[in-house]
Amino acid sequence: MPTKDEMYKFQEEIEKLVAGTDYNYMEAIIEYCNQTGMEIELASSLVNKDLKAKIEIDAQELNMLPKTRRLPI
Image 1 (cartoon, rainbow, N blue to C red):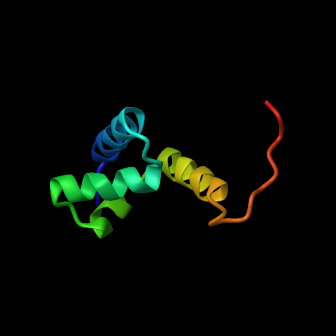
Image 2 (spheres, rainbow, N blue to C red):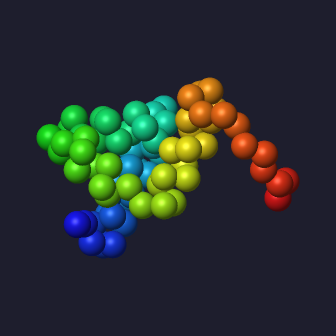
């Protein structure tokens, strides 16, 4: 079971990859795994709720998930 610190560090690395490239979050996680040799299954256990929400938004924009209604902020 990964620690919160490991999950936070993983999220930081993914955020850096997304900011520095044209990747969405799913692509960034796959690329990170390819670069580091990390198994996708291990990466899935490191995804925290903040990162999961960003992946969900990406999936909705790519029509992989149905769009949910959001209140304007």
